[in-house]
Image (cartoon, rainbow, N blue to C red; front, side, top):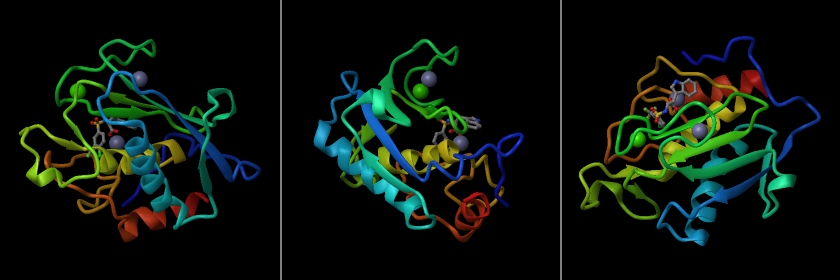
Length: 172
Ligand code: TQI
Ligand code: CA
Ligand code: ZN
Ligand code: ZN
């Protein structure tokens, strides 16, 4: 079953059209247009299940959600830990911060199961999971759910399960 954060915070009803900015990208070798495509696909999974809409903006000051790659300590008291371990984190509504560990062997737009690096991590899979957190979902006890707290490295999991859909539809 799905879960919420304590107090079940959500984006309020007058904020259904959310803007996101991809800001800190210098720490990744993935090119900018690939990043735009991957995050647009990840957001579209949640938009399809709700009345929420997500639009990329180039202006960080306009953004409800900011996405960036960071290495080690990066100013929020939750330092990243190098390859594997913590891959990414996102804060509950309406904080909007979504950080990715720049030290991971991120794979975007190609088959992660055929990646040469044994620790390869599929960026889109992690993005779909973290967006669930940004929208207010905690972890699910259903192993196939996007919001289940573990994923095997070298695998891709981007489709919302019935449990994820029920969870997000109970919030929005
Ligand atoms: N990052 C953890 C996660 O997103 C951070 C975290 C732990 C967290 N507890 C939390 C975030 C509670 C919000 C609320 O779950 S992670 C996966 C998964 C991670 C893990 O790097 O361990 C994914 C990031 F589920 F696959 F294991 C993305 Cl998809
Ligand atoms: Ca890490
Ligand atoms: Zn952070
Ligand atoms: Zn999680």
